Length: 112
Image (tube, rainbow, N blue to C red):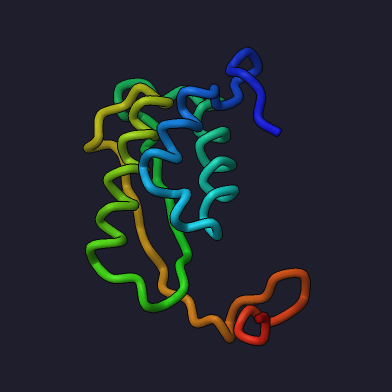
Protein backbone atom coordinates (compact mmCIF):
# COMPACT_ATOMS: atom_id res chain seq x y z
CA UNK A 1 0.00 0.00 0.00
CA UNK A 2 1.35 3.40 -0.93
CA UNK A 3 0.47 6.40 1.19
CA UNK A 4 0.69 10.13 0.57
CA UNK A 5 3.96 11.99 0.49
CA UNK A 6 3.81 13.07 4.17
CA UNK A 7 6.57 10.60 5.10
CA UNK A 8 8.45 10.86 1.81
CA UNK A 9 6.32 8.25 0.07
CA UNK A 10 5.28 8.67 -3.52
CA UNK A 11 1.93 10.48 -3.77
CA UNK A 12 -1.13 9.42 -5.74
CA UNK A 13 -0.39 11.86 -8.57
CA UNK A 14 3.02 10.32 -9.14
CA UNK A 15 1.58 6.79 -9.07
CA UNK A 16 -1.08 7.80 -11.59
CA UNK A 17 1.57 9.35 -13.83
CA UNK A 18 3.54 6.13 -13.59
CA UNK A 19 0.56 4.15 -14.89
CA UNK A 20 0.01 6.67 -17.66
CA UNK A 21 3.68 6.25 -18.56
CA UNK A 22 2.92 2.71 -19.67
CA UNK A 23 4.31 0.66 -16.80
CA UNK A 24 0.85 -0.88 -16.42
CA UNK A 25 1.62 -2.74 -19.65
CA UNK A 26 4.64 -4.31 -17.96
CA UNK A 27 3.37 -5.81 -14.67
CA UNK A 28 6.75 -7.31 -13.82
CA UNK A 29 8.14 -3.76 -13.55
CA UNK A 30 5.33 -2.08 -11.64
CA UNK A 31 6.26 -2.83 -8.00
CA UNK A 32 9.99 -2.46 -8.64
CA UNK A 33 9.40 0.96 -10.17
CA UNK A 34 7.21 2.04 -7.23
CA UNK A 35 9.96 1.00 -4.83
CA UNK A 36 12.64 2.85 -6.79
CA UNK A 37 10.57 6.03 -6.99
CA UNK A 38 9.68 5.90 -3.31
CA UNK A 39 13.35 5.54 -2.45
CA UNK A 40 14.33 8.43 -4.70
CA UNK A 41 11.52 10.64 -3.38
CA UNK A 42 12.95 10.22 0.13
CA UNK A 43 16.41 11.37 -0.96
CA UNK A 44 17.00 14.95 -1.88
CA UNK A 45 18.24 15.55 -5.40
CA UNK A 46 19.55 19.10 -5.60
CA UNK A 47 21.61 20.58 -8.38
CA UNK A 48 22.29 17.16 -9.90
CA UNK A 49 24.33 16.02 -6.88
CA UNK A 50 22.62 12.62 -6.67
CA UNK A 51 21.94 11.31 -10.15
CA UNK A 52 18.83 9.11 -10.24
CA UNK A 53 20.01 5.92 -11.93
CA UNK A 54 17.53 3.14 -12.63
CA UNK A 55 18.36 -0.37 -13.86
CA UNK A 56 15.41 -2.34 -15.21
CA UNK A 57 15.54 -6.08 -15.86
CA UNK A 58 13.19 -7.16 -18.61
CA UNK A 59 12.65 -10.49 -20.28
CA UNK A 60 14.32 -10.78 -23.67
CA UNK A 61 12.21 -9.80 -26.63
CA UNK A 62 11.31 -6.22 -25.76
CA UNK A 63 12.07 -4.05 -28.76
CA UNK A 64 13.81 -0.70 -28.88
CA UNK A 65 10.45 1.07 -29.24
CA UNK A 66 9.05 -0.55 -26.07
CA UNK A 67 12.18 0.29 -24.11
CA UNK A 68 12.10 3.85 -25.43
CA UNK A 69 8.46 4.22 -24.33
CA UNK A 70 9.31 2.89 -20.86
CA UNK A 71 12.38 5.15 -20.61
CA UNK A 72 10.37 8.23 -21.66
CA UNK A 73 7.58 7.56 -19.15
CA UNK A 74 9.84 6.59 -16.26
CA UNK A 75 12.09 9.61 -16.88
CA UNK A 76 9.07 11.92 -16.77
CA UNK A 77 7.81 10.43 -13.51
CA UNK A 78 11.24 10.56 -11.87
CA UNK A 79 11.61 14.21 -12.90
CA UNK A 80 8.15 15.03 -11.52
CA UNK A 81 8.75 13.24 -8.21
CA UNK A 82 12.40 14.18 -7.68
CA UNK A 83 12.25 17.68 -9.18
CA UNK A 84 15.31 17.04 -11.34
CA UNK A 85 16.03 17.71 -15.02
CA UNK A 86 15.72 14.83 -17.52
CA UNK A 87 19.47 15.03 -18.14
CA UNK A 88 20.08 13.87 -14.57
CA UNK A 89 18.16 10.61 -15.08
CA UNK A 90 19.99 7.49 -16.24
CA UNK A 91 18.05 4.35 -17.22
CA UNK A 92 19.61 1.03 -18.19
CA UNK A 93 17.81 -2.06 -19.44
CA UNK A 94 19.14 -5.56 -18.78
CA UNK A 95 17.69 -8.28 -20.99
CA UNK A 96 17.11 -11.44 -18.95
CA UNK A 97 16.30 -14.93 -20.18
CA UNK A 98 13.18 -16.42 -18.63
CA UNK A 99 15.15 -19.53 -17.64
CA UNK A 100 17.48 -17.29 -15.57
CA UNK A 101 14.66 -15.73 -13.57
CA UNK A 102 12.90 -17.27 -10.59
CA UNK A 103 9.83 -16.13 -8.67
CA UNK A 104 8.99 -17.80 -5.35
CA UNK A 105 11.70 -20.38 -6.13
CA UNK A 106 10.09 -21.46 -9.40
CA UNK A 107 11.71 -20.81 -12.77
CA UNK A 108 9.66 -18.25 -14.70
CA UNK A 109 10.15 -20.29 -17.91
CA UNK A 110 8.33 -23.22 -16.23
CA UNK A 111 5.32 -21.15 -15.15
CA UNK A 112 2.18 -21.36 -17.19
